[in-house]
Length: 169
Image (cartoon, rainbow, N blue to C red; front, side, top):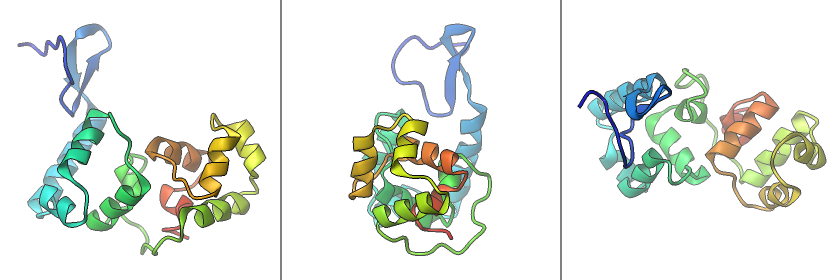
């Protein structure tokens, strides 16, 4: 087929060729994840392990198709199951684990602590990001951001997602 792709969901590990919309090429970043997934599967940490921790195979397929974001509770379960950092799972770090994870406090408490430690107010956060005041207020009151928001917040705070949620000091 020469890598031609005309419709439908592209397979995980491939991306559209920037020079030809009907062709897919290997995605180098995803290739690293695929190698890691196979390594973990060889260690017996696959879909069965995910089901044991309460993450269904269907939700994993949504993540792969990028139709849903990973929620904080599921991200924590995955990081604990695989013994890695949340940043590793999000593709922000090549380090699997450089600390002993703590049981995180409720997200609003960890969020407030992370902002205070960096001297950032909710007002500053609203002005320096795409997030609305209502969105930030809802996080402060118990809602949880999705993975893309965690990545943006961690980048802004110049820290790890694990730190942002209170899993790392």
